[in-house]
Image (cartoon, rainbow, N blue to C red; front, side, top):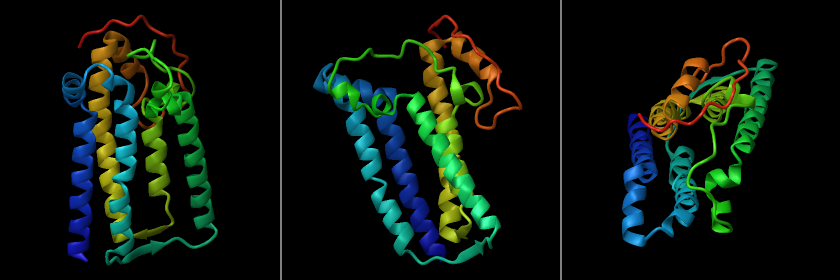
Length: 210
């Protein structure tokens, strides 16, 4: 059981490290130097495809490695948790739609020229209440699983930690892009868990610089 957990953790760390490395600005800059400016058009869709496909070995290990049950929530509470998962999935889809999911994955860039950076911060909908709703809804979906095992719990904890660290990396990039505008947004809106009531935000003037 311990060896299974260690194998799962090792594969996840390798996946997360590769995912973070390829998402970094130095990796993109290197690809641009080696392959020219046209790389900006297909880097994100190739990266997104690789990130999704490279998850398959991890999911396969989760299925085949020895495991042990931790708890199985009985009815009616399990149905409440399943309903919570459905709401989390809907929230994930809604937050992704707000971010123009196909553009976020880089698909639209394959068919038309797009600006190198967005025109402004996303300050409406879920993004009025939390800075990273996609991460929040993903974690809610995982933690609300009514049938938890040792391996699932380990993977859920690792994914949650990765989302937290990833949000720090992402916000550094956004500060570099938007400067004080994003710092103001950070002061107004929580990272993951919304406060009671969500402020109505105005689009600030972008001032690059960290």
